[in-house]
Length: 79
Image 1 (cartoon, rainbow, N blue to C red):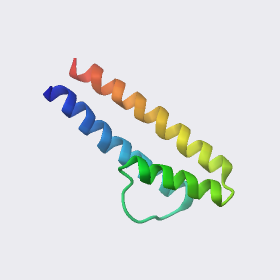
Image 2 (cartoon, one colour):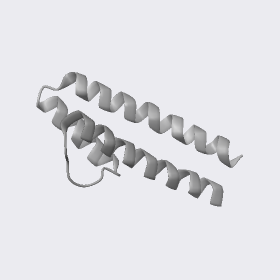
Image 3 (cartoon, rainbow, N blue to C red):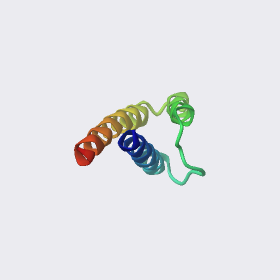
């Protein structure tokens, strides 16, 4: 149980940090950290609304792929 909590906590921290970094690189300085799915969805929606299709695709794709990869890495590290 503790291992699972550590994996989820680490994944949340790393995922939130990466989303913030990717958002910063895609559009410049932003305020706040993006640690929830609703904030992630909001960022994606704002990119689409502003016509930034490639930024949206890169943001969503890299966030999901990196997030899943880091969770898998966490499982491997703990085992």
